Image (cartoon, rainbow, N blue to C red; front, side, top):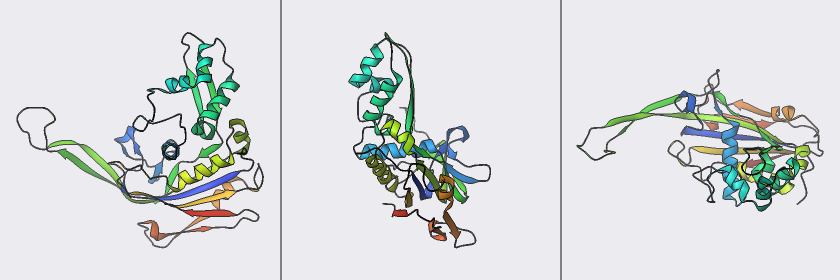
Length: 286
């Protein structure tokens, strides 16, 4: 598969219904909000979900979450050392950063997509400090309108330890967004793709991951069906630099409110403002 040789921009429209799309651990795990009250889903959380979907698709992932890992390694260092070529570099006295990055990009799709910082202390060999810049960049998802957060108290009615039966005990609080429509944007840079070996096939896999982003992602905070991808807009430029800046392409997605106080996805209409010479592929979520 050939290395990506043209710029790509994309935008994703998603909705949240009675779920916590991305809790803030510094704020009692309440759904993230900016100072204007708009909901947010961090770029880190979105990349985590893309990694999970790529992993579900059979791709090799370096940064695996502990609850979804498909190997026996308990740390990133162990996973890196398990690669025969990288393992030799860990044991050598000198490490070629370029060679280390090249091998890591060949091995793991998330490294050649998003980049990665490899920073490991010396252990009987040389230390490793290698930074890889990936071609796929993603913005924080932001809700179109301010969100309302509902909070409920959680109790338990069973004993955790042996002993006399107790009444219901308060366990804490659970927070959710009753309804919100979010948009996030992203781009794929062909100059960086050349450095990491990111291919046209990898771009197609990322697009497929975006379309099915919330499959196999259910949890108590995000029940099945509470997070939904509605549209993925995919612009493929004809050159490495692109006909237009990413900012202008992203602004070409216009949002029209169909109700005075929008409450759900059906209260919005999404329109693409045409850009001469640049076609957009519109895909519905699964």
